[in-house]
Length: 247
Image 1 (cartoon, rainbow, N blue to C red):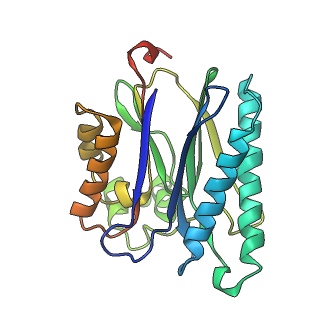
Image 2 (cartoon, helix red, strand yellow):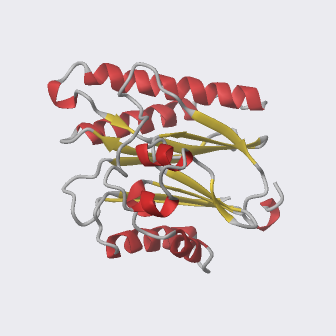
Image 3 (cartoon, rainbow, N blue to C red):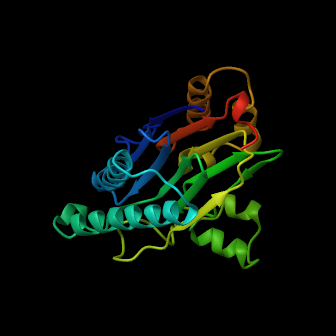
């Protein structure tokens, strides 16, 4: 599998509150994570960095994953630990009070691929079709689910950035963890700096183009900046190679 990730401050912000991790361990497993910090000042980048660092460090020393249950339990455990670390840190400093972060990621093992999500960063999968594999934990996503607004209206809703779930805000956190179908060709992780400003059709066009994963990641970041660069943007692309396409 080929993979690449990058993060950019954008054109309007002075600091980058996104963090990401993209690592392979000794057991031939891959962990990809994007965290988009919230909390103003430098608190957002502290929260996102704590989460990414904890997941990465735990992954690099993790035992091999031998079952779905073990992989899911491990993800639940380390993400809850990250939540606790951010929550505890936020109580020690007035400037970091209320800080938190989204957290979205993929764990690829020889036994399968698992996705996890807290907040409104996203994972897309390219199968026969291009699909969003995560559900946003946001106010407007809840309104769409209830049928109170359309998907189109959600794109321009004044409260579209309001989260209903994040790491570090509360002492308990709800985490979506799912095993995904193995026949994907590519997986794309991104913060809302990409998906809120660049249409899915444009994103698909880039990841389907010829060339290396690295070039595609930077092209997507460039498109977010061309759309105004209103937010930090982080992108990770994982692409299966020819022999891996059936699982």
